[in-house]
Length: 87
Image 1: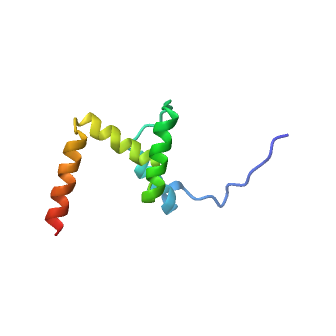
Image 2: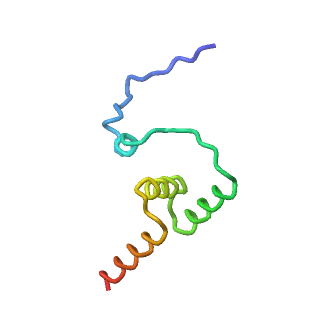
Image 3: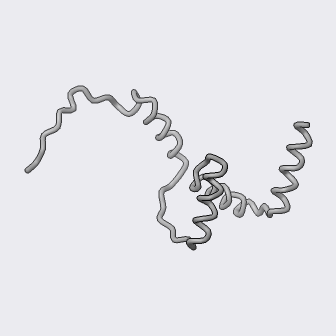
């Protein structure tokens, strides 16, 4: 059995603010499937839960830092500089 759907009142994605936001966010990203160690995934999920963020965003940021060649020491130094600047 095939259902018939009425799309006569449907809106374009560009007319729905939430969909516009999703499209803009995903424009510069590619969906992939990746296997990671359970311990790594749990660590990112725990950190995301503690900070109120997304574990996927945290993983992406960590990968970005790696690609840029930033070490943990670099990240700590940068954070200290930012904190001192704000004080």
